[in-house]
Amino acid sequence: MSDTPVRPGRPTVRKLPQLPSAVRGLAPAPALRLSRPSDTWFKPALSVVVASAVPHLTLLAIGRLDLIVSTMAGSLCALYGHGLPYARRARAVAGVVLGMAAGLAVSLVTASLTGSTAVLIAVGALLAAVQKVLCDATRIGPPGHVIFTFVSSAALFAPQRLGQIPGHLSLTLGAGAFAWLVALAPALVRREGPERRAVARALEAAAVCAAARDPRDRSAANPGRRNRDAADPGPRHRNAAAAAVHAAWQCLLASGRPTPVRRSLERLVVHAEAAFVAPGPGPGAGAADPERLRAWAALTRGRGPVPTPPPAPGTADELYGIDAERAVLRAREGRRAARRALLRRLGPGSPLLPVAVRTLIGCALAGYLCAALGVGRPYWAIVTAASLYQANLTLSWNRTLQRTLGNLLGVLVFAAVLPVSRISPLALVCCCLFFGFAAEALITRNYWLGSVAVTPMALLVLEFGGAHPAGELIGDRVVDTVLGAATGFLAATLVTNRRATGRVERALDATDRARAAAERTVADPAAEPTERDRARRALTASLVELREAGDTAAGEWWQRALPEQRLLAAEQAGHRTLAATAPRRGPLAHAPSIGAE
Image 1: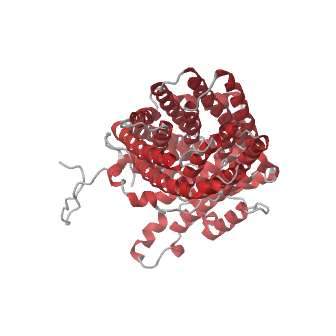
Image 2: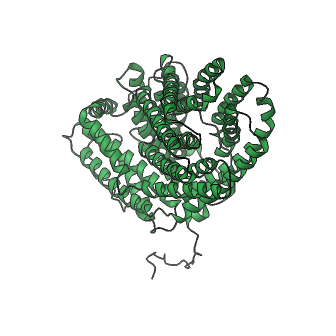
Image 3: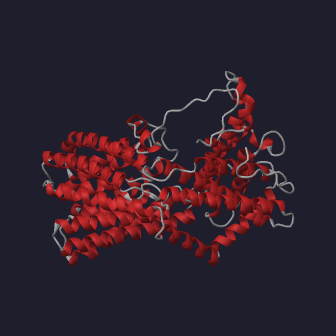
């Protein structure tokens, strides 16, 4: 019998069984739909052009364009870290440079020791899997592991001698050091730029949440729902606001020592947090004026002074807690805790392990199939397969469509621009720089649109080593794309991620603990402000992790049923706890339990 209650006086309607969400999500139209460009699209686009132009033109001047692949490996590191504050960006990009050099070294040594295609494909697939796991575990962000796999796979199939390897690695490290300088150069002009953008996003997300709650901003076409919706802006808006506020706090915590600008930004985040958790009219509701939040966001994102908001309830306590938490994170124990968290994400029970197995099997199958068919460059198939693997099957399907369409259109662009690139070496360099900029400018609209520019750039790189027949390049690329995408998605389908539901259950337990801790600390009048505010931010972080885990599991297939009711109840209770603790006025007398309605 069903456990679903039936309301008296209403007929029972039997719903038809629905397909799993992962299957329903395998539609082509949403995957290919264009979105608005990122608000910072120009930063990685300009950075990679500057970081590539200097090494490229230097090699052109000395007549050694054949070495451009080694310098490009370092120049591409300028794509990473643009959402991080400069203190953390310095460490992150340095790690990217070292990781790029390590992968390149493994590939060059392997290529110099063996010419066996089977061994080279196996090493390429293994490197792709390791790079995927490390990038996901460290959460380095876009472009993720694809750039690492592109560089290491291409180097595997370039003939090498052991004596040449130190020179190639020196060029990569030198270009990487210059890319590091390029990535950090904006700090000389606007050192709080990343923090300002993160806070502006938090204010904008809070404004959307407040507008959804505000009856004045809702349509009058459905007055029957107005009062109910005014008290609840909806889980989508709440989750987006929670994620944006959490990201803003993390950015500020990682930004280094406090400055007057960062102090103002912290106060603005307090207002954003109060706005999205404010229960409606009453204490804290003044901070929930959508127009006011949008105006602050525009000023914060601009180049002028950061707005100075009036004190929100509990602002002094919140900032005291931020200072104490920043000190804890910078202490030795805080760094140890961060390393332990990273090791847990890489441990035997990690949900990243099935994705790594997918990557290993898919890349190996793609490479071996292309080699069996006599395609001269099986590493293109390896890179195509590696680029497909996202957090779940639905996203991997979307990326399969995007990659295939983008590459097929890209080879047409390559055929059109190839005569222009062969006018002179300078024309070839300029074409590569143009497509590098175009790829980053377009890829935030949709991955397939960026791939239209990435594909000709990758094909033009081969021209630095000498001219190749256009028909051969285009034919190989088309075959590698189709085979790589087909085998890659086949591996994603066959290797199921049964751990996705387990991650949801662990996130639910963590959210329950965080919510209980927040209620205890707020209800305890003797609790220190540091402890109270840390508990609130821990609850916000657990809600963000819970939503991420739920979205990932919802896009998988062939797994245990998701505890959807418990997930929804935990999110609702968590947001109510945040709302009840927002004014920070006394104990939490009537916080609802997890199962409350």
